[in-house]
Length: 220
Image (cartoon, rainbow, N blue to C red; front, side, top):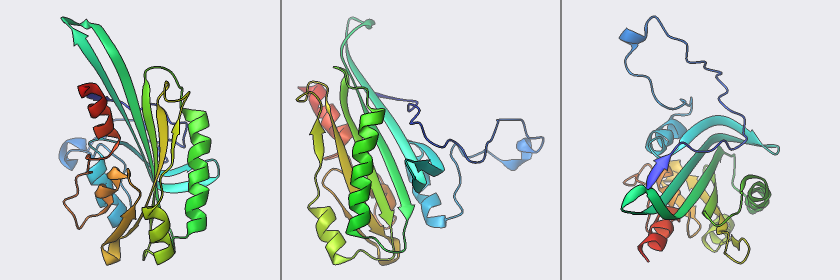
């Protein structure tokens, strides 16, 4: 399996409008970060964990919803016979991650984000035999995790088969994180939320996530 540049998600782009022009002080400024920077220290540290696997943007807007952080990752896999030009069992998977700070997390807002995930699936997924799966993961960063929100997220699961699974599937994942309380809750396959729990080991888990499921398919 190899990671390639994520596809254009049809979003807002880089709000800084950097054009790559040379900086006369670049030789003394040190290496530039290969990602945007956030004024929010917490989100900037999260981005530091995500940058090696995700193409990141900030101040991202889509369908009337705004997010402080947006990430996309594309995974491709194939089996080869004798030479790389002779390949088969080609599959690809995508994950789109949306995160924003909120004053308080509510079930109503999470339900609205679920509807957004289904709308984006209709617009962004090109279903065919090579599409294995697409995940839409929404993360709310709040001061606390209310009990009704914890119950809703922990019980949440939403996977849709495309053409009875022949064209793969897509899944909507939810997570709510309260950094000050070192508390988080995530739906079953929201494995990438591990990057938001700065008090943990920080590497996004793969045991039950999209990457693990794709690898499992290839091993069969």
